[in-house]
Length: 492
Image 1: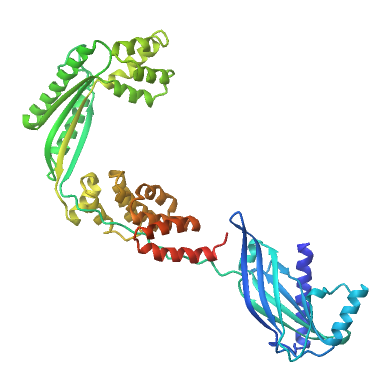
Image 2: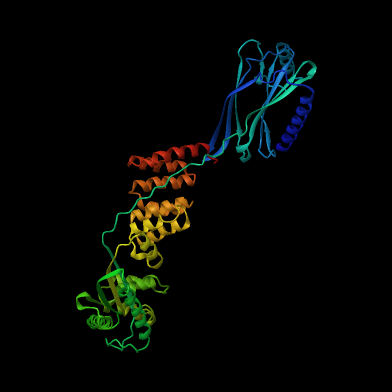
């Protein structure tokens, strides 16, 4: 059907062009087209049909009694590959009107539909209100809308043709909203307290607590500890507050013995640190915890053990170490317990060295250097300054805010600013991951609206802009208006 329609249109236009060279439309410019409106009718959020309305004003037309003007609306795609002829309307003189009506009544002429035939009354104001609904096709969005006026006299002779383009595009190009995401400058961190920790896994002789440097793999572990401690003590940006040693034992054996063992091993490790690095007693804190069932639970939770759920249930429900060991031993005649003893328990025999310190405040130049070396020493405010030393919207700019979020993942401002940077980088989905964690901030509500608008979720965006406005955010007022303009011209 569409193919036949297209062929007919091409034939009509070719005939029109040929006739235009022979005859000029005597009524050219007299037929006026006014009050043009086009509405998109949505179904499930998508354009389903198009409603077109316009007025044809005939007040200036002085039509001969035997003449008619056939008005045929045409939609044509911008690449001219697709087209659609709409219903024709006829404006006819008095004699022509009588002839048409008689022919239609007799059934001898099926060209006309009398509902679309208007008898012209010269010197009187006359208009035709035209309204039509058509099925939407994607090519129609940028289609032009024209009307062909074809004048014929008695015996069907052509008296001229005129093509009038009403609009060059059925819909205007989608409006590109100018959305503004907001940042919040973090408060200055008066004193930057930081802490680092290292788990040290030393090998001890059975039931002993002496730290033997050359025993089994201890030399490698001592090297790790040495690197860790020197990186802190040798950093002029830091002022160490204290060292804390926590000793742990694996759950096998007697509970009381494991308490003593974890205590002695913690003291031995603390003595090693004091003697090796000159750490004073006043800065050294020592604690011990005996059997590390919590540590075992964490290891099992991330494992693929066959009896994983059963082991976790035993740890949660059995009150004593003896009950737990007995229950685990019963799972499969001791095989699972032996697996734990060999592969899991050694990781529980450990000392944790934690160092607390205060970091000096940095100016921008110092902060930029520290950012590339050890960003954890920077405050949110310092990271904010580093970010703004890069071009706004650049990848370096966004990366600093991502680092800030990684260092302060629970901080609302870190989430807000990281989300804002992702918006400016054109990544609204990523932005929402951060912004949804900061909804107590009016700026975050505004930014969520921006991200949703970028995803063309205009109705949802408006909800967040309204929430931001209610919270006193002024930028959301402007963004809401931009969102409205985008929604009105959006292709859906």
